[in-house]
Length: 173
Image 1 (cartoon, rainbow, N blue to C red):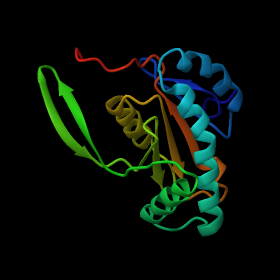
Image 2: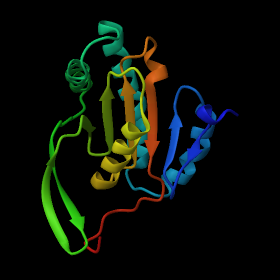
Image 3: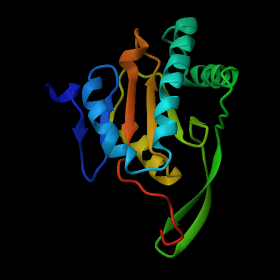
Image 4: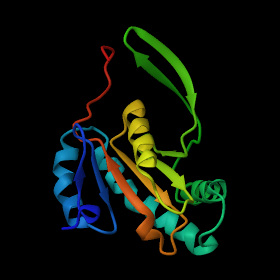
């Protein structure tokens, strides 16, 4: 397999897999992720509905608009499907012995188990993926979708990001 088409392991146990280009390794990673997080099954079931909603939005608008338009339309589409979404959330950030409430603006957290990061860029960069992975850690979520609406065929712009082995937050973190 080509490196850009296969499941990739980077430092630690972060796994990144493009959903369209190589779904088979994604299937193999399901067991690894499922064992690691209490919300994985719910997030995994929801992911296909979110991708379907994003495709619906893309069919309506096509590529070329601002991220904020796609984000707004995706939230509306998800609400029509009965899913709760927020675009802003207060998060407790812990660093050594300090705790701080911070107002972070995530694109689309869905049903308390999955994060959608909306992009409308010529190409997704590693920093975009790193951002989603950092948010997943902060929010203690098992799965993120990075969706780039700039693609002519939206399925080519969908990347699933996992944090296998992530466990529930505890007060000792």
